[in-house]
View 1 (spheres, rainbow, N blue to C red):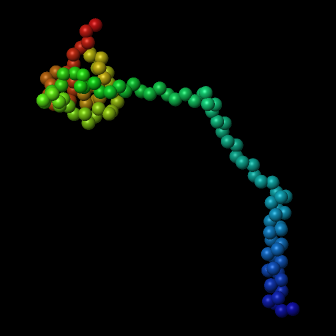
View 2 (view 1 turned 90 degrees about the vertical axis):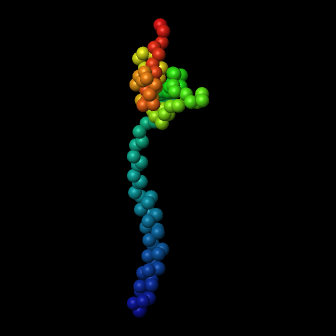
Length: 116
């Protein structure tokens, strides 16, 4: 026989025998087990943490400079975490929290202590 015919026969038999060998190997060798998954927490044990106390900045509830009835304040930092004034008990952003008794436009609030 010629060499080309022998190569063709070997190639054709490999096309038929290769998938059969693959199927035999798949059924004879067990698959690897999946890695263990961590247990899921029970639904009732999932409790979201309470949100931090962050009421709105109360700068407009204090005497502020007003021009034609419109309050003149800088509200750029009013979205930050609020702090409670120890004297008047109102909540302010970091810009309005310091006490500013002269109503200057440099931040702060005019503190009017609450009457017990």
